[in-house]
Image 1 (cartoon, rainbow, N blue to C red):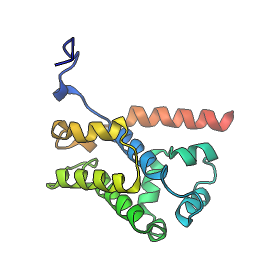
Image 2 (cartoon, rainbow, N blue to C red):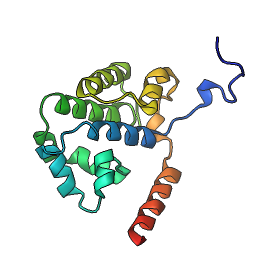
Image 3 (cartoon, one colour):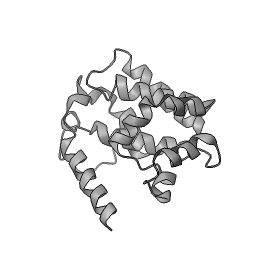
Image 4 (cartoon, rainbow, N blue to C red):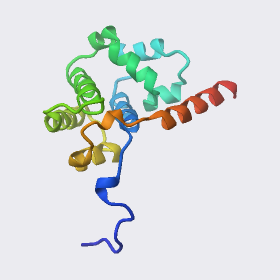
Length: 163
């Protein structure tokens, strides 16, 4: 009732990039981690070229996230709420943001939100949109190309190395 103008684009036409959702979810996962615990120290050792500020802020790129998801050792370092939240993140990446949406995608998203809340994550805009626009995601949402966003992040990464 408090919206004055009609939206410029229909909600069904809005396509949120799965890559940017992964970035936002990863950022929210890393921020509340205790910096003196083994899992955070392992991140520091695994990605030595990542600056301290980016690591503390949870700023990772796609290949780093994929590498961390495949890393079994990182999974063993997590305990309690951290492990539950990480497992939910991996399920979301595979069962919702991947090439095909799992049948129980609503359950996966709700589980992720609950576990992130227990971990102490803040409800950022990307996570809020993930929950609100759940029904508007395409069946094959992850199959949408993130090539342009990936290319952008590669250019930014190479510029950071130079300067």
